[in-house]
Length: 373
Image (cartoon, rainbow, N blue to C red; front, side, top):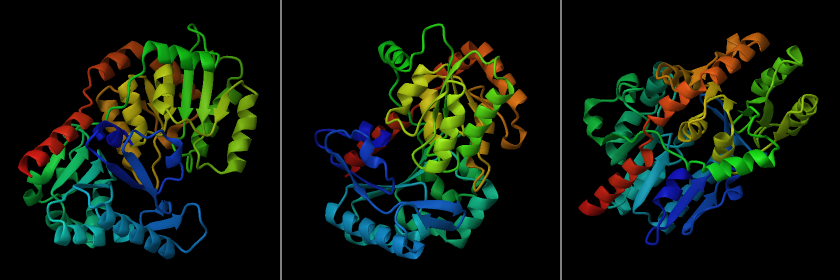
């Protein structure tokens, strides 16, 4: 969504293909729209299940593949960006990529990769088994890595052949809109947080696997019921089961912790907070870095190591701090929170000096495509 918002313009039409059931809750810029395909959720590295409708996963994948193909053929894009999975789920995007190469050879095809996908051995084995390296050679014009090469280099980590290196562009991390002082004050006022208050935001991302993170935060309050001098808001995520969400809400209420399932402008909440606690998914990290809000990351380690690797790398850069999932306790969580709050200016300075160049680099690449077309 951040990419679409930045690249939109009077002479640009953007169509997003998405499986997210909450896509309609976001405000889209003019001349940007989306086509909804059935959502899928990853259970293991090769096991996906339908997110909303109760149908066989293979049937859901067939529907997705058909919609993707039909949309591309009707829309006839000048630029086709594939997110994260080079061939889509179970190669659902492969027929479309092949069709574009044959029937619309002028269309530029780009693979957009997050800074980190998973540990090296998992990605290499997966790409080898699916012949991804050859498809990258044959079907993509460029590969955009939404990260910094000096933090994590997928060329090395994922054994990308030298023949593909000219196609790779490290864009840098993707920035979000920064809060103004007025917006920050407005958000804090909405949640009755005064200037002298310490505001901690705890977010579980989509929420499908975030229940334990929020449970740890409430358990800390159980252990220290009178010595936690801050106000808290927990965003459970729209995909958390209702029963889990209601249980957490009931427990949190005892300590005056506010909860809500979703917020359409997370960057505003993050910018209003004094500290963010999250699992460290790519989008949340970009929002944290954009707002320069100190954060404690408690990364998920299954079914992928993506968040753990990212947390370690960014901790080494002095941008965030992290706590391994299996080390979390009420005492250590409290200690980490107070340490980060005491050193908040150090974290803010480091983040303020960290350049988020993702969108500017992508715009430059698009201008390059226009110049050579």
